[in-house]
Every structure is written in C-alpha cells, then in structure tokens.
Image (cartoon, rainbow, N blue to C red; front, side):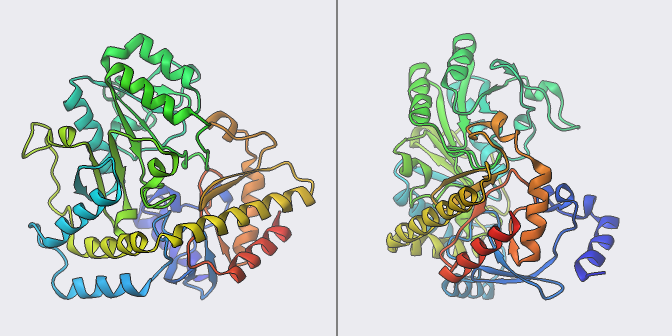
Length: 423
C-alpha cells in the first residue's frame, strides 16, 4: 500500500470523504488522492516520492509556477513581521491601488478571504445598489458554495432556483434564475418576464467549471447590452480567468466592461484570498460608507497581500509573459488536436489562452448540456494512465488544465508523448 493510500484511509476517519474540498476527491476516477508534500516550478511530489508535471497549479493561480523566488522571498519577509494583525496595513492599500490601476473597470475594491466570499458579497452589493432581488446565473457556471448560488441546472430557460445541496432552503434560491450559457435568447426570455426585478447577471466570462467552454462570439456583449437596457448590473466572476487570460483578465481579453468583478486566490499567488470590486458609485454602497454590510476579520491578510502584490507586479511589468504563455498554450492544445486526429478519435479540445479541456465526447462542447455528453468512464481511464506517467491533471472530466510559465518545452513534449500513449 502506498503512503497516499495509507493517509487516505486515515483521512476518511476524520475528514468528510477524506478531503477538504470535493475537487480533491479521486472517487470519480476510481482512485485515491495523491497526498502532496511539496511543489516547485511546474512539478509536485507526493508522499511516495513520485514527481508529477502539474497541470492544476492550485486550480489556476500559479501563473508563474510554484515557489517563484520573488514571491517566496516576499512571503518569508512578510512572515517575519507577523502572520495576521486584524488591522489596517500598508499592503492592503498597495494591493487595492495595484488592482485598480491594472483593471480599468475597477475604481474601488474590497479584500475578502475566498472566491466564494467575493461572489456572495458582490451579489449582495448588486442587490443593495439596484434595490432588486433576482439574479441570473448560467447552468454549468460555478460561483462558489454560498446558498443562493447552489442551484440545480434546469431543463427550461425559465427555471427558478431549486437547491442543489441539502441544507439549502428553497426560499434562499427562489430569486436565483438560471439561463443557458452561450444562449442569449434564454437570458432575454428571463428579462421579459422578470426584467424590473433582476439586480444582476453573474457569469464566468469563460466557463471553466464544466470543463473549459469559451463564450460564443457576441455572447458577452449581448449580456452587457441587456444589462444596460434594463439597468441591471453585469458581474464577471474572474476567480479563474482574472489576471490569467490577460493582465486585465477576461474582460480585457474580450473587451467587455462589467460593473462588478470577483477574484479569488489568483490575487494572492495561490494563498487563500479573494476580492470584489467595480464602479465607485456601486462600491460606495459597502459599509462603513454605505448600507450594504460585509466584513472579514482576516481580510487583507498581510502575508497573502505580499504574495499577490509580488505576482501581479511581475505580470504588470512583463507583458511579454502573456504573449509567451498564450502562444505556448495555443501550440500545446493544437498538438493535442493533432494527436486526436492521428488516432482517429472524435474527442473535443476547448481552450482559451492557458486554460483548456479535453472532452471525451464526439460533439462540440458549447454549454453544460453538451459538456455532459462526455464519457466520464473513458476520462477516468485516461486520467489514471496519465498519473501513472507522471502527469497530474484534474481527477474529473469537468475541470480545466492550467499551463504556467514554469512549464518547459520538455515538460510539454513529455506530456504530449504521454497523451499519445494514454488516449
């Protein structure tokens, strides 16, 4: 029995399912989690000494790879001054100013402790600002585990919220409306019925929690136009895409201006942190200035701020990083398509910049319904084989691959070779 298997047997006695987040569970591929001991550059090592080329990157934020020396140095220096104060710090101001300078749509920003908290708070602000209760989310878009957003996908375009988790009262999700991603008509149908009651649309500008599903041409602009028409707010959930697709995130990549934006661990170079921000007139509704209450004792943690400031500053000062990362990613995902063609396999490859997915389905994946046609059994076989070849990918069909600047040509060539063998 491996060390990871032994640890998992112990973990299930004390932690639900043996993991502290379901995305770490390997049950869907019929395996047990690899327990990681360390990471560096593009690699991770498990308790048994196995090295993996890492394509998860802490679920996205490791754009520069693990243990970047400048970030590590900044974190260590911050630690020597104290781990947490619960008081205002210079680092919070530096981070806020940096993000406001980098992202044109953001005039003011509030630090929180996770992407879930950022989204929950942004929706509260949207409701407080508009005086309306209903929101629209999209089937297959995940916005954290707050009660109001855990809504089951509906078969119709006017599906009112049905709780997708035990413990969530139906009354909490009654104002959550569900539309179909990449389907503008489904959004317009909801607005025709509820338009004057809808506070906001919240969307992942690139769907990345049903696998990677890019927005169809014109889709994001249509959401902007509809919100303008009905005086509703447009919220971009950039927990995954923020500062990854471009310095100004998906909104800069696609040229769309949201009213509010949410971020997660990406702004802390992988440390537990989040933020939400937007137009000044909206953000001034937040306490202690306005009447929308939101608080966090440990928000703006100085160690997380030090890590995030360092990573974002490096990305700002080196625009060539994005050119290199996106070009490398384009070539990598196109090579996967070539492998599929050579093997006469009908599977689909979706990617935007440095995030992508291989779907085990023969039809184009443009939304949640088409993503769900994937053969999860085939993916499970493929994932386990890739792990055996030292390639660490998500233990679930509906998660993304993340490339980083730390992945070398040799790493990517080895990965493609493994794919040739494992597919």
